Image 1 (cartoon, rainbow, N blue to C red):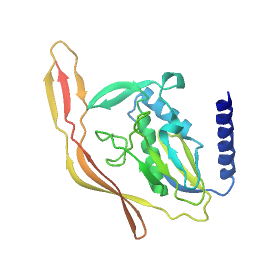
Image 2 (cartoon, helix red, strand yellow):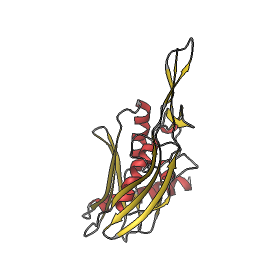
Image 3 (cartoon, rainbow, N blue to C red):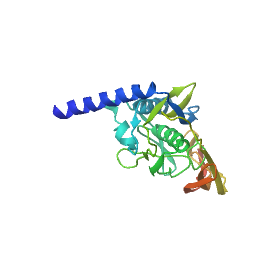
Image 4 (tube, one colour):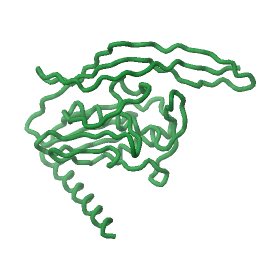
Length: 244
């Protein structure tokens, strides 16, 4: 009971802080959106639910934000559903499928806001909802996205769905904003090929969807400052179709 009271008190204090920040002349320090077109209903639902759980989070000056700690487990009792995820190139249904789009959207907004990236993992194969090299995979409770706020003021996270797009915005009470930009350097690229397998007696189905392989370097730039954020290598996944 004592722990529940402390958690409720902490949540109340964060809510008050978020409301206070919203009235302190906040400025938009980073914003990013990804399209939900082509996602399944359950993927969209999971992504939107995770976005609602992120919404209103406040990262204090010097504080560390954990996606998994904020969103929590992706279980059915919390409203999440099974949805397609890529596992070694094949699509399988798993609890919380689609949530990685939410973490990816937040990751890119955080890059543009100048947040320090403490922990970020790429997917095994590049997802389709973001340019290659800009994804951020999560898996409760192992693979996380962790950010540190380097600003002398708190940063508030706003996230949700608008016009068929998943949106993440970061706000801070600053007198001015010096914008960052993100530049990708595609060092190599391999287009997927398509292979057909005989599957007599079974309907046509796509076993592997096909993903391009690439090596990509990502830089964060502001003025004369140039920071290497990541260098990722994604293997090519050839498209495999079973047909009668």
